[in-house]
Structures are given as C-alpha cells and as structure tokens.
Length: 134
Image (cartoon, rainbow, N blue to C red; front, side, top):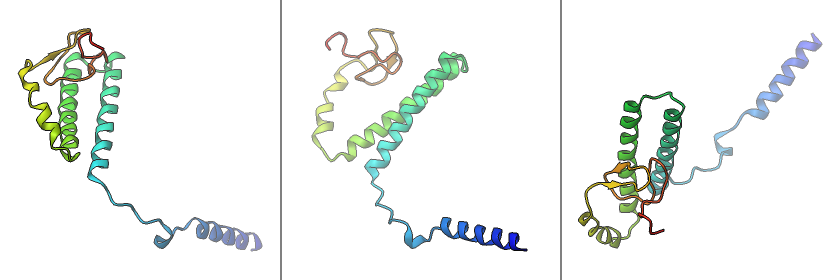
C-alpha cells in the first residue's frame, strides 16, 4: 500500500512537472512571407542534394532522376522569383530584362547539362556557369 502510494505520488509529480500550460509558452512570432519562402528554397536545395545522392548510389533510374530534378528545379525557379519579387527592389527585374537576349537555354561548360535559365553554378556538377570568367 505504501509502495503504491509512493508510485502514484511520484507519477503525479512527474506529470505536474512535465505539464505545460499555454500561458507559460512564449508568444509565437509573426510569420514572415520572406522567411517562409527562404525556408522553402532551402528545403528544395536539400531535396535536390538528396535526389542527386540517391541517383549516384543507384536508387533511381536516369529517367526518374531527370524527371524529379526538372520538377524540383522548376519549383526552385518559382520560389526564387517570388523571393526576388518580394524583396521590394523594383530595379532588379528591370536589370534582368536584357538577359533574354542570351539564348533561351544555358549549357554548363564542364558537364554540358542544359538549363532553361542562366545560373551562377551548374545544378548538375556544381561548376561555375560563367564560362571561364571566374
């Protein structure tokens, strides 16, 4: 009987110590749209790295890898465009306007991977896309 009482008291004390009241929690900060987009972009980059790793170890066929990579790259471009749009600088899109003069696709000078938009680094091999002008 004494042992049972001691166990009940001990469990009650443990539950009381672990119980968290809503008023004890710190208030949640406002969710910023820019922060959410940055987190989404970081998650897409992580997914691309994981996808490339799984392809290199042989878990994915070439067709599945290319299809998945293209979908993630399109999503990444959309998120990056929204981040640039939300950055508040109206000059950035105007500065990017002369870029369409270049050919519609860009090829990596190292691995010959093709991308629909100019990039700083190759999404396939990681080489700089500057074409030799580092």
